[in-house]
Length: 443
Image 1 (cartoon, rainbow, N blue to C red):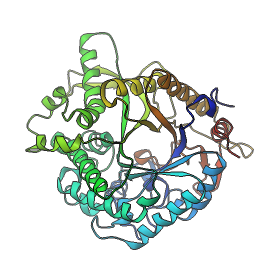
Image 2: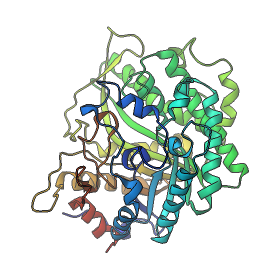
Image 3: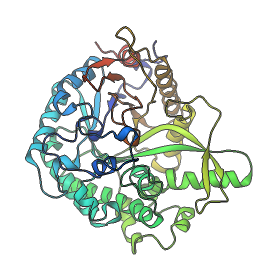
Image 4: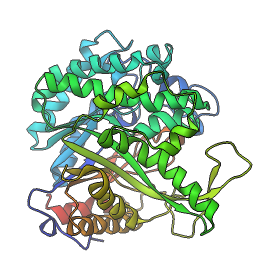
């Protein structure tokens, strides 16, 4: 099982990598880490499948050297990882030297293996102490985030190839405060409106602070999901437009045009923080690159029985992943070209996450995940076509290096290029790992 494209089919400076996130692999109970709002969310019955937590996860905290050896053996150029705010600052404010020491060792280990470190400062592990004060509903969290960002960069910034402030602000704000699926598990439109803004204020303040400190190559990672009307009737088309508004347009429009979509502001009427307009100039300060996470499309129908945004996702006809997500590679090409055309221009774009969950099994010591190989192959072809269309795409990171803690779904879904036995912590590279190795030239 191989990919139809090879490294030589992409530009000479194109980066191939794999991605992870701290809470999903490290083990939150190690190294003096404080509780995050994901620990308290997971400890609440009914929030996470099987009541799974990130306490041990993949034990990457102790096994990072072996995991990075896998990255090197696969021929990858770069490793995208995140630092844990709750590990670096257990109470959200005070520094834990043991936590910084770990990331110092990790940064050295990445560089020693010839990999480029792509750091994400926030991948959802908000310290519980800050959640107690309102979390992302509280504007002060943005200032605390800037302090945390400066602390991390002062220690490891000299080795970082690239730094992203926030991963997937839509998940931080909408999924977590409107739909209630992720921590803190709220369903409140006022909380959502404030989180949707304050997470961008946090990005702006951290970016300003890091630029002042001389840090280079700063960006942010947004997730995009193609909103497909469930039918050609006017109401469904309008509903898909609203889905596109809060999911896709809200963040990229603020970052590149210093404004929010009017159709979504109408829905947030009376709930936005006072004076939010005064933050838009700093939110829209230039970034050096944009990270794009893409997995699927949604089929959206108008829902007259619900309050704004009066929409609901309905099943679609395309083949689906193990999580029921439709496989739609053309959506990735569409976003890469749309972003360059309408928002980012010549600013470099990196596909920072793309992958699929599948119920993998080990048979005779192997995991033959042909479905995942086909998924990656189709999406790499979509990236290749986007580059041919003129989109300035500079890299691609598969999600994920390891099977890991998949948030509210616990350990049931497997996204990894490498299979993890959570009882023994044995790593087994899958056929998809081998396909990348053959395509990009690993050992």
